[in-house]
Each structure stands twice: as C-alpha cells, then as structure tokens.
Image (tube, rainbow, N blue to C red; front, side):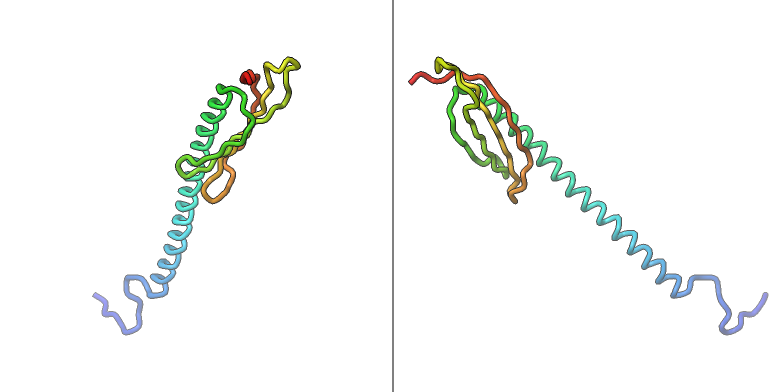
Amino acid sequence: MRAERFGEAEGGFTLIEVLVALVATSLILGIVTEGAVLARRREKTAEMKREAVLLAGHLLAETRAAAFAPAVRSGREGAMNWEVRETAAAADPRGQFVLSGIAVGVRAPDGRLLFAGETRALKSVPAQ
C-alpha cells in the first residue's frame, strides 16, 4: 500500500468542478423553467381564443336567427367582452327584406382582440 503525500489529489471532485456543475445545472433549470412558463401562457391564450370563437359563433347564430334590427349590442361573457354590430348592406325595393351585415368582436379582459368576424344574412324586415 502506498502512502499519500500532502497535496496529492485524492479520488473526488474539486471545489471548482462542483461550482461549475452547479452553475451549469442552474442555467439549464432556468431555461427549462422559462420554457414551461411560456408554454403555459400559450396554452392559456389558445384556450381563451377557443372560447372566443365559440362565443362569437353563438352570437352570430343568434343574430342571424332574429329579425333585422340595426343596432350595436355589447356585453360580457365570463371574462370576455363582446360586441355585435348589425347594419343594412342592401334592401329590397319593396321593403320586405334586407341584406344584413353582421360583425362580431370578442376581446380579452386586457383589451386584446381574440376574435373578429363578419357575415351577411338575408332577413325579413319587421312590420311597422
């Protein structure tokens, strides 16, 4: 058996090697954490957009089914604000039908536009 002399390396890691490993691990952990936060934010935005599309589809269908009423309606559904605008694009010369332009917009609580869409529908004019 050989005797160890003072100052000779023993089996193990030096303090510098341990510090380098800790720094590398910290950097990798920071990158992974940032990626997870961004993924969660994108998932939340996608979910809000999906809900906005469903809400807008419902509003468009509801407005298309109703008699022509040129107006701007707005409201709040959950955390989202919506607006439906109905205008006359063209009218029947006899005044019985109108080609209605229907526009809908859904916004996030912070004001970002999540969905905007337009359609047209041939509608009867209510008797006056």
